[in-house]
Length: 452
Image 1 (tube, rainbow, N blue to C red):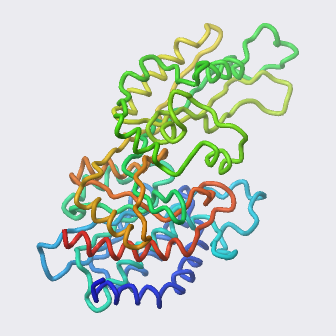
Image 2 (cartoon, rainbow, N blue to C red):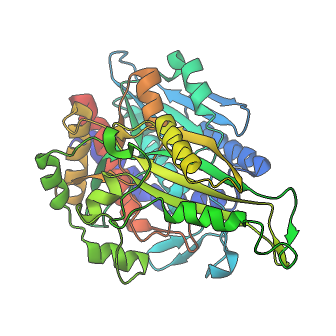
Image 3 (cartoon, one colour):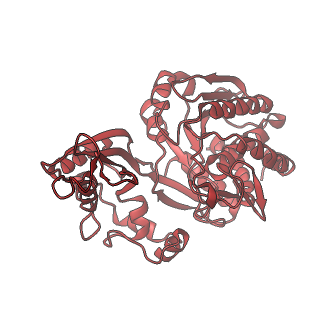
């Protein structure tokens, strides 16, 4: 290990207790995406953090929604590569509050875990990336140029970066993006994610009578929009649990035998997934393994059903918000059109229907043999003392394909959250020893990438 890496790791050892204090401060800010005031407060907190670190060219950009932050630090050698660090400071709502064992916006330590909304997704991991940079800024150890891009609209529309990134290509230009919003398969299983599913978010609305109608006076002669919508949703999967939208699978890229072998080698099985979810049995297309269905096959889920009230009435309308997770080479708008065709074909003459396209983003797949990928692989292996795993994540991170299209750069996807961190649910938590290893791995990555 080089003297520079040793000095940076020594700094992390001394500074790590302070990181918990900073995370407690950031968790206290309830920066749910829709809370503009709280998100502005979180952005201000991070701006001051970047200033204390000694970053340069710190800018806060107002947008149509929540602020975007930028900062950079250049080495003395202009030929060094540039790493663009991405993170988001917004969080999901903490509902349902009565299922939390602690206050969502008060950081609470229980053994090796820190609990609170945003600990894992992704305030804790964001601060871990910044600590790695901070360690390299001491004694002028920075081996690469660093740019930082932080946003507050990752968890919910609008996707403000869709406008911001193309308008700021020169400012954001880099050789690679580092994104720690993915996670690990286990505390002893360092992981690199080489694929993400895309998404097409839509709302189906079924409308019947001009107003809510007394279900005694009109029951039996007026079709209930709830019944129609339920039948539509029930028909979205066939008896083999495959999605029934017209021509849906025609664009789905077939996995190679080599990739199926790679995914089969992961230390994850159906029983582990079921236990983590708290169910007795898994569901889905049995022609594919659970790990393939999670990351390499499309899925369709209803997120919200809105219909009726506690009164004796046939409701005027019923709606459902659903997300279709996509894989290469599916297109969000094309899938939206397939959903429209399905709904139209299953709408009886007794009601009207419409499908609203809310937002979409494409899937992402990156070459596992990129030089930067090999650098990250080596850094994780040196830190954990074991070979990292490659896998495809079931969720999506819209910014990665945007950076590819607008800046021509790929994204390295890793992270130090664990599968049982309860992300987006009650009792979200972060395993603090794993994060510390992660900070050390990032320091090693910067030196590895500079060397390659």
